[in-house]
Every structure is written in structure tokens, then in C-alpha cells.
Amino acid sequence: MSDYTVVYFKGIERGFSVPSVLADFSIFGIDVEIKFYGAIIAFGFMLAVLFGGRMAYKWKMSLDKMVDVLIYGTLAGIIGARLYYVFSKWDYYGENLIEIPQIWNGGLAIYGGIIGGVLAAFVVCKVRKMNFWNLFDIASMSLLIGQGIGRWGNYTNQEAFGINTEMPWGMWSEKIAADIIRNQELHAEKGFFVDPEKFVHPTFLYESIWCLLGVLVLYIICCKARKFSGQIALCYGIWYGVERMVVEGLRTDSLYIAGTTIRVSQALSAAIAVVCAVLLVVLLIKFTKNPKPIDGVDFFLEEELKKQAEAAKEEVKQTEEQPETTEQPIEKECN
Image (cartoon, rainbow, N blue to C red; front, side, top):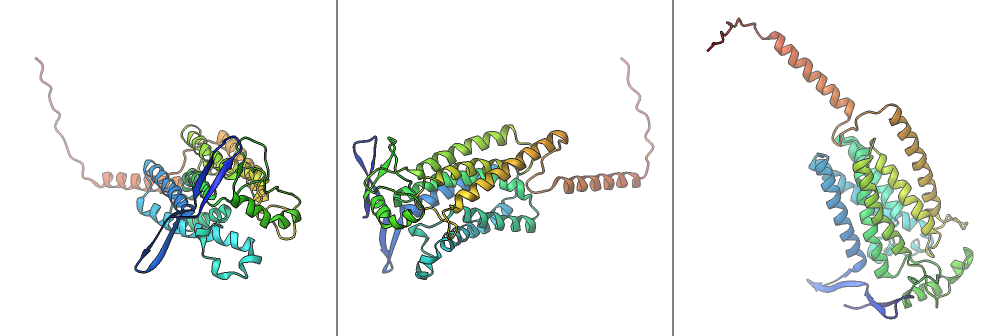
């Protein structure tokens, strides 16, 4: 195992040796290298799936339908995350096409993953007759688990860091310094300067803590204050949108709208947070004025009520068709 990076934190005297490669070996003459980046993301994904599966079980969701959503949503999410990143840096990838599928080297944009996964889930829900918004409520909490753990993959790659800071948790490594020096011209074009010899914000850590805390907050809301389908998804949009809007402003590796200094994820996060906040308030007011039961995951309330009404009519019809029988009264014995 090789490729260690010694990482230093301002408030800690000793450095930490951080490997980027989990294992490398040969099988059938083929060299295989497993990076911590991919392993950590896979671990976060596994925990997210386990949590989502547990919630789906409690909500009596069909296992077959859940697997369909998981498979198609995951594939679309990975593709969406990579395409979002690649298109945002097309000046580079357009000349290095062979690197486009190399996701193990980093380069997955979370918003692209969310967009791809949500679109696939929406289609599957329509085909399989599922309540998309209830499913999105579960997925929102699972997403925060995956994001909170997955961000540590950025730590092993020494990426997704911020501008200089004097805070005791400021971080520095040779990889960080080299990246700063390599991108100084780009930083200058975007209007900021980062000293490669000074500590920087560990923005991956900020997002990890915020996302994992968000799992707890959203879970409590889900258990204690959920009023309508889609409420937890809207809370996710607010919670993550606010955090990403702030933290993105500290990062040095942001994707920008072409020809501007506007950070794509920062602008998108602000828009998502505002829209979700407005929708949440409007729908909560609507629920207060006209409360009604929440739809189930595998059925829509109106459809279920219709089925129940039809079943009741059929039962009445069958009862009416049964021949009447004359029963003799039973005399009670008196002791």
C-alpha cells in the first residue's frame, strides 16, 4: 500500500498519515487498485440503503418496488453526478475523454447525483404505482447519511478544501499546497488568493458534520411532526441548501457559471433553500386549514379509499343476494 499524505491540523502538534489507497493487488494478471475514496463512498451508500430499507419496512413498502427504485436510482445518480462534474469542467475533459469514466479519482458532483437519482426514482414510481413524495421523504434522510460519510473520501484525496483560516481546526498537507499552487491563476481570475503555506478550511468536515446532524433533525421531524407527503424532502432542501450555500463560498474548487464568478452550487443551493422554505410554509398552512391522512408508500389515499368503497359495495351486494333463513328463538333457561 502506498501514496500516503501527512495531514496537519493547526491545533494539533503531530501530523496524521492518510493513505489514499486501501488495497492494491493482482488477479488473473490484472492490477487492481481500491482507493479509500471509492470505499468510503460505498460504505456511506451501504448505510444509506440500510437506513432507507429499515424505514421502508416500517412504512410497509414493497421490497420488490424498493429494489427497483434502488437499482435505477443508483445508476442514474452515479451517471448524473459524473456528467454534472464533467460538463462543468469540459475544457479539461474535452481534451481528456479517456478520463471521463474514472470516477475513482474523484469528480462526482452531489447535485448531479441528486438530479439523476430523483428523475429515475420519479419514473420508477410512476411505472410501479408508488407515492413518489413519500419515497423522497425516506430518501432525503438516506441521502444525508451517504453525504455525511462520503465526504470523508474527499479527506483521503485531500480535496474539497477551503480558503485560508486561522481556526484551530485549519488543515494543511503537501497535496493541498500543490493543488493551491497549480490553481493560483484560476483563483486570481475568480477574485481570491490562497496562501499555499498556510492552513485552510476543512470544508469536507463542515459538510460531513452538518449532514449527519441533519439525519437526526429530519428523523425527529419525521417521527414527531410530519404532516404531509414530501415534508421531509422539503426540510432536506432547506437544511442542505443553507449549509452548501455557506460552505461553497469557502471552497477553492467550486464549479462556476461560464464567464462569471458565480459558483454554480452556491447559486443552486440558495434557490433550492428558498423555494423549499416557501413551499414548506405554504403546505403547512394548507394542512392546518384542511388536515388529512398521509398517503401510504405503496398506494395513494384516494385510490385506496376507492378500493375500500368498492369492496364494501360488493360485500353488501353479496349479503343481499343470500337467502333469508328463519331461525327459531332460543329459550333461556332460568335457574
